Amino acid sequence: MLRQISLAKLGLVAGGILTIIGFIAYFLDNATLNLVGFFYGIPVLLGGLALKAAELEPVPLVQPTPPSVVALRDRQATAIQKQILNDVTRYRYGQRAHLDSSLEALGLAPTDEERPVITGVREGETDGAYTLVLEFDSPMMSLDVWQKKQEKLATFFGPGIRVTLDQPQEERVNLGLVATPEANS
Image (tube, rainbow, N blue to C red):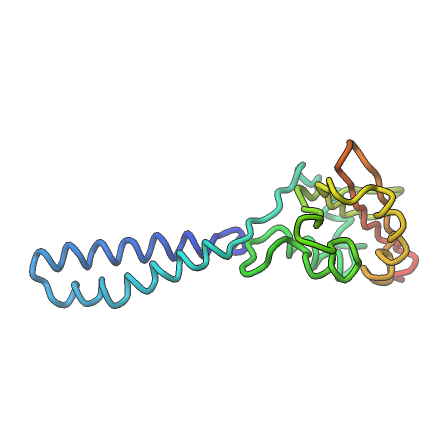
């Protein structure tokens, strides 16, 4: 899975190797390798460092997805559910947090300090329907605030989705995106 490979780490390793080759070639008086090492290695290394500074790691799957739920996803998941799952489980660059613009649009992230952070994602089944659950660490946003936005959440995530909210423990909120197959037919 290419989306699970960090471009920053790839740039750091490739740039580091080329730069080291350049330094060794310099001391061995090999002009060709010296040029390759310095003219390609250092920029690639710097690019890797820049990507590392802007890197947002994938959200982990908190439990393996059973084959029956994968089959259910293939049959019932909406395009939005698939896109969210794809977006949060891969490396991202230049974003402050996963779904940051979505949370801002929903009024759930008035400031960076108050923004809920996705800590895990899991797939499951709710009453025979495919469900994508986003687990948020939400110390500044209470469950009441989330519940007041529930209708807006359902509209935002599109047709064919019902939104569920629950609080498994204090300062944590689970956002369930449940496919409504009858609406998708």
